[in-house]
Every structure is written in structure tokens, then in C-alpha cells.
Image (cartoon, rainbow, N blue to C red):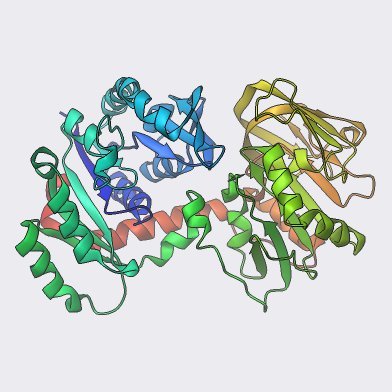
Length: 485
């Protein structure tokens, strides 16, 4: 039978995604057929799986770690937040519906069947499945109908390892508290715990391990230090975005990114963030776009019209006009591309009640929203220099107009995007374009940075191998032996 283990957290953002990726790479390096699985994910950072359809970007990364093609079954339920209390529901890669938080709770029992189907599909081709939970099993107010944590674990009979983040403090209380409030059946699923993101002398936590065992009876399966290699991996979701505050005034080129409430697929920016001589500034609400930025990037959005209204509320539209007036450059990706045009129309109310809004007017194009979503991996070539590009498209709407006569790229044989007459404003539907080393190198050279850029994908692969080696060092050897053979 296929082995499986599930990593659940004492809270969100405790490092489950990275640990699952590291375990997948460690197993793959040992020749084990390993697959990642996450029953339910909530993120606007989506990827297009190799078998078509949307999955969470984290599961795409974990499949890369496992050295296997990605599949929609690795993340059968993906929630893409559109507003404060509503999300689009993607099931096995396809849009299934929309629901607010309370309505979704009623829908979860229906979705569990899809989850179990996908888990069976993933397990059929694996020796080991490493499952990632979502949030925390201690959210007992959400336990009824749960598909993300203990609801799945008990239904599938998958043992659980809890992950606690010591960096945020209170890790002993969070572990003991989780033990206290779980039901007997749920508590019985937990086989131990991992302390994550430890800084300093590990022996200082020996008494903490004794205390947790005294209160819970659970063994410690490892104390993992702060894994620096994790910073070289694509960001998962908006929780991770809150930590992306690096600003290096010594860097030669500044690139600004306004952070809108429904920002999506901002992992597009990771290759630029990894460049030592680039200062990638994430501009938050209440801040101004920096006047010394050479380039402003408008990233994707889950709700273009709503985010365009928020952009104006922050007066970033005024900042953009001033930026362009100073000779600055702008690149809009997907929703950001749509914002750059003259108008955005939504005659069918796909995004909401607003049927038409005025765009930023920096490109001579117009966008009309449509219900049918474009979801595909793509190969492309930049029109200006012929640089090869690889990426993916996930978008609603069709964009056309005068500036589309100067397309940014040829994507799957079709012209895509638009460039302004002066060449300083660019829009495209192609996500992932900055992972192209040749294109990224040429772009940064045009901004004044000489030299070739390093191989970004090779850097991600190296980071995964480093993670695997560190987990092999810091996790309990007996437990790893039982898990990996």
C-alpha cells in the first residue's frame, strides 16, 4: 500500500509548504516515487498543472521537488479570494462555483468526495504521498465537514505530524493547546510534532521538548532551524507577501510594485527579487510609489475592476502618471495589463456589479471581461528581441486596440500583449516571463544593469536540494527511516 503522511500546522504560515517540498525532494533523491497533495488550498497564486487546469502554486513547486509532472489532483480544491468574504472555487482544476465563507461551509461535504477521488488518483502512482494541511486543526469551529485537516486525515486514515513555528513565539502553548481541544479521534491521528524556524542553540529547547511530552505524550520528530534556502523558492500566498519587505538602497536599480488587495500570481516577481542588484520595493497602502524607481510593475489581480478602484484610492494613478512623465517604464501583467488600457468592461457582471470603468489610459487598448477563463501553459518569444519565454496564462477577458498592433510576444503562435508607441509601457497576459534568464537579463540591461543573469530555475532546484539535505540532518532519523525506508 502507498504510504502517506500529513503535515498540519498549529497555525497558518508555520512553514508546512517548505517542509513538504523538502521531504518530497529528499524522497525523490532516494529514488522513491513521491507525490505532494493538498486537499484544500486558499491562494491567488495559481499555476497551470501539466495535465491542464489550476492548482495552488505551492503544489506546483512541490511537484517540481518530487521531480514529477504536476496534476490538478495534487490540489483538488483551490479557493481564490475575490473579496473580503467570497472566493472562486476551483475543483480538480476547473471553476466549480463561487461562495461566501458561510456558504462554503455548507458545500464542504460535497467537495470531500472530489478530494478523496483525487487522493486515490495521486496515491495510485506513488510509493509515498506527503500531504499538506491548511490553517490549523485547532480551528474546531470549522471541524464539521472539514476537508483540509483532520476531516481528511480521519477519512483517509493518514497519520499526522504537527508543525509549530517557534519564531513567532508561544510554540509550546500552541502545541499543548491543540492537543487539549482536539477530539479523541483527531488526537489519535497525531504521531508527533516538528519545531520549525528555530534560531540559535537547539539545546536551549530541550526543556521545551520535555514539557510538550509531559503535557501531550507526543514525541519531537525534529527541531528545524531557519532554512535560508526557503527564501529562494517561489512565494505561496498573501501571507508570505506580508514578509516581503526587503529594500536595499545600495542596489543599482529600483523596481516598484504596488500591492493591491486582490493581488494574484505575485510569484511572477520572484526572479527579480532574487537579483542582488535589484531593489524590489513592495509599496503598501498609504505609501507613495518611489520617485526613483526605474520600473513599475502592475502584477495580476483576481478582480481587476475592484483593484483598479483601490489603486485610485491610494492615488497611485497620479504617481504612475508622474513616473511616466519622468521617463519611467511600466509593465502590466494580466490584470495589471488590463488596468493600463482605456476601459475595462464587464457586461456580464463576471467580477461584480460594476459594468464598466475607466482604465489608466497608458495603453491604447480596451478589455472586455468574459465568463470563459483562459488556462494554459505557454511557450512564447518576445517580439522585440526574439528572446524565448515560457510561462502560463490564467485570465478572464479579451484585450484589443491600437497598441496591440505592437505585441509584446508571440504566445503559442498568437500575438499577445501591447506596447505603447514610445516603447515604455508594456502589457501582457503571460505570467512567468521573468523566469526567462535571457529576457530578464535584457530587461535589466535596458535599466542600466550590465551583465548576464544567473539561471533562476537552477537556483530553485539547488534550493530544493539544500532543503532536502537540511531536513535529513535535523529530522529524527528513526522517523525518517520509517517514512522513507
